[in-house]
Length: 224
Image 1 (tube, helix red, strand yellow):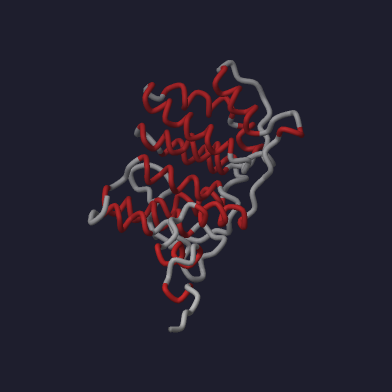
Image 2 (cartoon, rainbow, N blue to C red; image 1 turned 120 degrees about the vertical axis):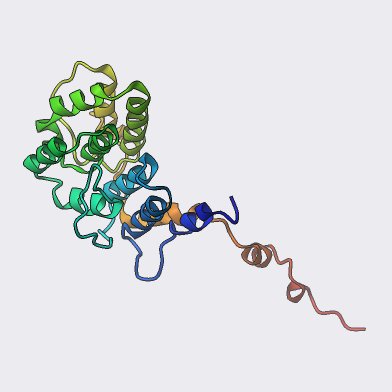
């Protein structure tokens, strides 16, 4: 809505000078929301989407902040999950320090979205348990976000192996990297992501007027 703090927050989603093909728009948007509304699921989900995207890492350091839990910050969530994406022990240690529901939901979605496929495969049983222990409303939210990220095609190069008795999680794993190559989503490049972002930015009235030749200077000159 115009003239609200959220209008300013929404403007952070645009690539600024020097930020092209980086995670800065996601980090900046999540940070702005975090600073206005406090720690919340939406800020964390935005940060995790940025971390999952095939973009160069761009963030501002937040000394003393963690990736998950009460002392977390969206910027460090992106940076630390990227840094430790192939470290199974780190993910286990992080979960052990997170006691609240929101933090465990953050961990579950970040593991699915950012960690290497081998790491997720190693922790598949633990991941399934964490999701299963969440309250139903929170569980549905995490699964919705996990499905949307899987459908992006970003995770297809990091397949997950192993079996789960949870039909929904098994379906997610199939979406992540389908066995049929012809139907596998193409992994998006940073250029593709930037194009999608740019395509959703509303065109200015001036650009529309010029493209449709609405201006007086577009008219043919006439002489009397």
